[in-house]
Structures are given as C-alpha cells and as structure tokens.
Image (cartoon, rainbow, N blue to C red):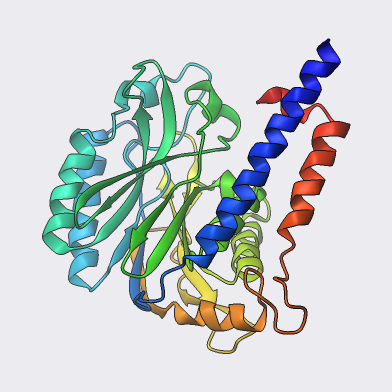
Length: 334
C-alpha cells in the first residue's frame, strides 16, 4: 500500500511537471516583440549600518534620487540592504526589523519610484502577511506604478535559516524592456536553474542582490559564477553587493553589470566591478538586443534552423527529473 501511494505521488509530480513544460513552451512562444532595448542600470555598492533600519532607508532613498538623476531606469541594492546582513546563533535583529510588503519602508521607496519613474530592487527581511512568525530573506521590487511585489530567497544560505524560511517560487516582473528575473546570492551562485528558468521565459536581464563576504578566492568566484550564468543563458546580469564593515564581516563590494557584447559570442563588463572599499554607484546604459543576437547564434529556446528543434532539450530534463525521483529520496524533502 505504501509503495502504491508513493507511485501515485510520483505520477502526480511528473504529470504536474509535464504541465509545467507545456506552460513554459507557451510562455516562451508569447515573448513580446515590442520591448524597448536600451536601459540604464545602476548597481549600488552599499554600506549597511547593522540593525539601523531608519538610517539605511534614508541612504537608500538618497541613492535612488542620485541614480535617477544620473539617468538610471533600474536601481539595484544588495541583499538585506535595509537592515544589514550579519547574523549569529542568538541574533534576533532580522525578525525584529522585518516588515510586510507592502509596509512602511517599501511605501517610502514607492514614493520615489513614482516621482522618478524608476524600478528599484532592494533586500530586506520580510514578514508574512498571513503569519507574523514567518520570515523571509526577500527582495522588494518597486516600480513607477508603486509596489510590484517581492521575491523570497529560494535557497537561504547557512545561518540565514536561523531566522528565515525558504521561499516557494521564482519572481519576475514586467518592464518596458521585457521580463526581468530576480535572484538572491546563493540562488545564483550554486543553482543555475533559476536564471535558466527566467531566460526560457524570455528575460534578457537578471538582477542579482548579494551579501558576499570575503574568503580566499572570493572575487574570481563572484565574477565567474555570474559570468557563467550570463554565458549559458545569453542574458545581462546586474549584481549589487554590500561593501564595508558590518557587525563581524568586512564585505568587499565590487558590484557590476555584465552581459553579451556586441560580438555575438562574448560577454563583457558594462559597469564595474565597483570599489572593494567604499560606497559608489556603478551605472551602465546597455542595449539588451545584444542578448537577442547571441540567442540567434545559439537557439537555446527557439527552433534551430538546422535541427528544427531548440538546442535546449526540455523533454530530457523531464526524464532526468523522473529518474532522480525514482532513484533517490530527494522528493521526500518537499
């Protein structure tokens, strides 16, 4: 009986996965063709004051104003920029400073995004509307029309799980430049499925907020992991990191924007890496059609004129996931 129930469960999982595959194919076929291409992206190398939400918010507002006046369309702040990142075994700071979205801090930022007609993404501890004891490490996403929503980090790292729960779903938002995908730190470095998901849905830009601390070889790791996501998905990547001393950690900054070059087979830095010692804005005006040109040369998600099928064989991933479900116990952790 137990085995029968398990088989039923697996059939249900893979039926749902099959539906997802069909849905993905439909969404990819519906990518809009009237998107704008040229966008100015600002990544803030931001120094947090640990636990001082009011001061951090004031400086976030100041950088939004400064970046908007320099022509930015999309402005990016690091992971947990609102409160600071550092946490330890007895730390309650993030829970004590968490807010719902919408909430006071996001409402304040929304006043500026409406005023300047910009999009802002910044990290903060989010409190659930439904359960005040449920917290997430989230990215608030706010645009010219006000608060768009939030992305809760799918894969919290290490001690983060002392205070926050895992998020449940990806989050992308529509802009005049098309779909923009959102990821946080560990999500991007170690789980390439998330940027690939957004790319398959037509996103040409992925915004990555992080609190990457120093360790031996941190900079090649930081740059190369994000560079790999840009190459394998043929998309632009914008990354904003904390800089300076928090409670325990000396964060190294180095925020940047990179993506496909004019040459169809390369990626390059468009802005940054920023300073490893101080706050600053790195800003780049990029033409997202470079991602389209790269995808023409490597038709991952559209029909290859030679084979008649996309290069990315989605049907094989369905089969591989089924094998994983049958050969391992990973599905029991759902």
